[in-house]
Length: 178
Image 1 (cartoon, rainbow, N blue to C red):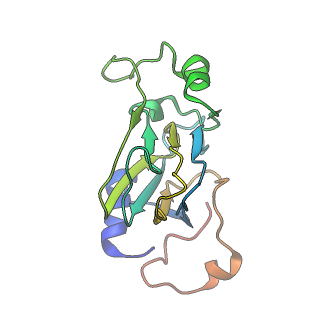
Image 2 (cartoon, rainbow, N blue to C red):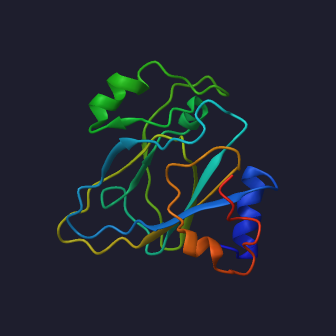
């Protein structure tokens, strides 16, 4: 969490003062059902605060095999509680008629593929989903590190007090929850 290149990347996106939020394994085995359209909350009413997730897709993924689905520009809406099981529900319930606030273009769903070693950055408010994995596919190995602007509590923060007290080189100013 304190690697200089990781911190440089997070600070380029969030600014000089950041907090480590969480690190989770997002690997998906064969037969995994994927995930419907959703987003994650963080200071939804405070646009000056941001939350960034950095995904490391160790062995990559194909669009139809644990592929990441995204809606570029959806993070601008700062709606951190999206939850839709299907494309049709998402289209009718949230996406219909929405436009990118910067380009003015209609928001659209994209399904990505990624080669091994792909790193993807995503704002926590961005709408995203994951395609199912066929029963004969291999494990999709992935890990996500999350950093945020301090100033609001985070519902995704899973750091224990014991971890907070552990000296990890480079993290001295990253662990305080504020």
